[in-house]
Length: 201
Ligand SMILES: [Zn+2]
Image 1 (cartoon, rainbow, N blue to C red):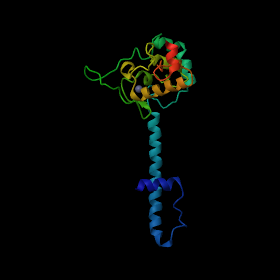
Image 2 (image 1 turned 45 degrees about the horizontal axis):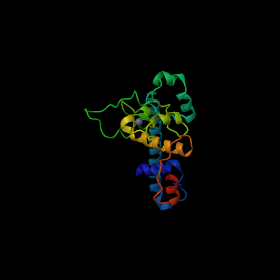
Image 3 (image 1 turned 90 degrees about the vertical axis):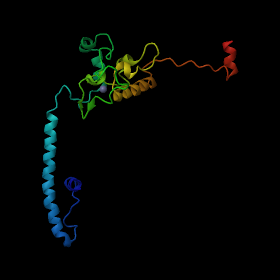
Image 4 (image 1 turned 60 degrees about the horizontal axis):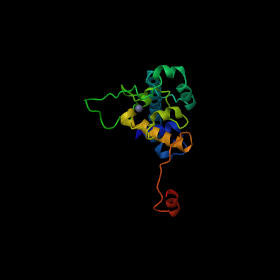
């Protein structure tokens, strides 16, 4: 409760002394003194938070947002070739799990509070320059089966659930924008329309 009051008092000037009735002067004094105390405490907390932010290891820091254009250029670069070669990004990845049988689902997410929270992050989370976006078709095509045209399962690619959902959305959006070509399923209308029945015969 006091924290809530302090936040209000710190952020805005809701506690105006003139607006309060004279009978509550003692109360006002106590509120003002506690406010000063809590404001100082609040500022100290913020300073501590900033210090913690600076301490994050850059290799696991995922707070920086990489634009799609950078990711598209990265996929065509020599650095990418050297890392992955000609194979898809998920092929060299191996899931790390307890026991012999892998869990049915992959983990919910690899990134918590802006940094990598696991020892074996999924193929998308581990490389911050791989951005799932409908314009980044070179990356999306690596996750589409050449036989069926469907998006590969997370049990095959090892993507965490969060990234898999982002992948599904990006692929659908790319199809809507016409960036990924796909076959429309063939449907038989002959039992509903005579004109189709004549054509087939
Ligand atoms: Zn992940």
